[in-house]
Length: 385
Image: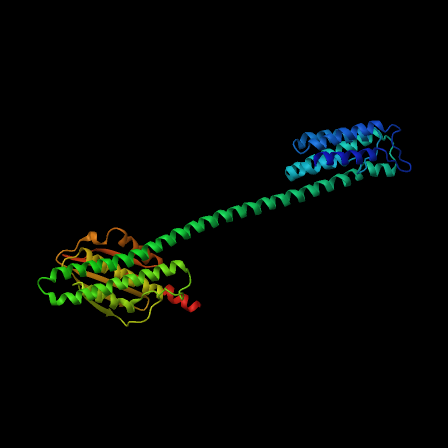
């Protein structure tokens, strides 16, 4: 491409060296003009790598040609125009202005030497005409420079958007892994803990009060069936993300299903009671799901770690806040019961809905888990809809 450009510029410059007009004559010899055109075209060929050096050579050739008496036509100045264009594309506007001024001054000075007594037409060609031929190269170079800068900016933004998209995908995958881990932990840990307690109680009563064993075994069967149902629903959601109506999925549990969890715990020998403070009402499904899972996890920990537990669950409904307090009173309440992934999952679920969870000792042989969820953001979202 550079060779073709330089060749075309040489042809134009050589043709320009051969032009003359009425009352303004070129030198009789064409060879000096052709040689100067060849050197200037060679400078244009090298201008892609050395724009300043090439521009200096092209200016010197153009000035020498004008000093020899050749007319400074756009054809003769074609190599210089190309060098100024490339210099403007590669450099700043201030540098391009300086180099253009130097080029115009040098060519005009060369023309003044070559035509000591210029006529009116010759004077215009060697002064105003020079500026008119060279300035468009600067304007075109600035336009190309701006276009390339815009393209670089667009490419940088596209690359940045691609990186952000990859980061967002990784973040979403991480959040999805955490959600799946929480759901599986809640389903498996709770039902297996309750089933284990029911089986242990049945084994304990088998020799002392065998008449109660069938009831415990029925509860054990119910616990395992519930675990299988929830596992099936969880796997169904994973296979059909975003489609809650597909076969094999069930609606997300809410506070109205707490009674099933409580009955299973009672069948395992845990004394559980539920109280309400305020007027019970339907809450946003995500809030109810969060409260249900946290109460379920708290009862799971009681089943695992407490000895002869007595559990009180208090649901507090206020105008702009919903709170759940699960208090375990037993002969032995191990704080470690809420360690591991259980407490982490509680906090993650609460944070996801803008709430908070506190878990810790609440007195002698008492352990409490408290969930607080502000309802104002959910009410505002409902109004916006």
